[in-house]
Length: 149
Image 1: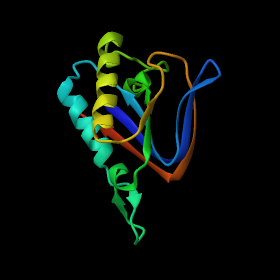
Image 2 (image 1 turned 90 degrees about the vertical axis):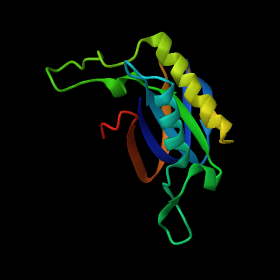
Image 3 (image 1 turned 90 degrees about the horizontal axis):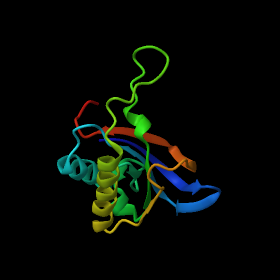
Image 4 (image 1 turned 180 degrees about the vertical axis):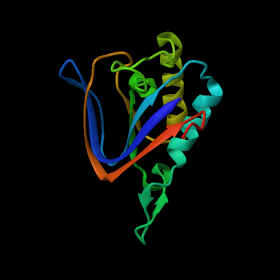
C-alpha cells in the first residue's frame, strides 16, 4: 500500500458537487492498494498514519501524532499512486490492486484508524472526486508498506 500523508488545516472531498467528507485540523491521506497487498499492509499503513509524529510540540519540533493533537483524517482512495511513469508518456497501472480487493483493504484501513479513536471521513471509492485542502506547512510524507521509500 502507498499513502501520501499531508498535514492540513482543513480538507474536503466532493462527489458530483456534494461534500461527502470534511475535516478540520488533521491529515489528508491519499491511499492506494497495490497487487499483492494483504491485511499486514493494512495494519502497517494504519499504524504508521496514526502514530506519525508530524505535528509540532511546544518547542516547535515535529513530535506529536494525530492521536496527540486530536485531529481528524480525510482518507481518499487514489490508485494513481501506483502509477509507473518510468517508460513512455502514459503511466502504467499494472502495479495497482484489483478494484474489489483494493476497496476491501481501503475500508479495512479506515476501520483500523477509527479503532484508534481518530475521527475519520472518507471519499467514495472509485468515484471521480474533487479534493480541496489547506496544507499546513506544507508538510507531506510518502509511505509505502513494502518500504520502497
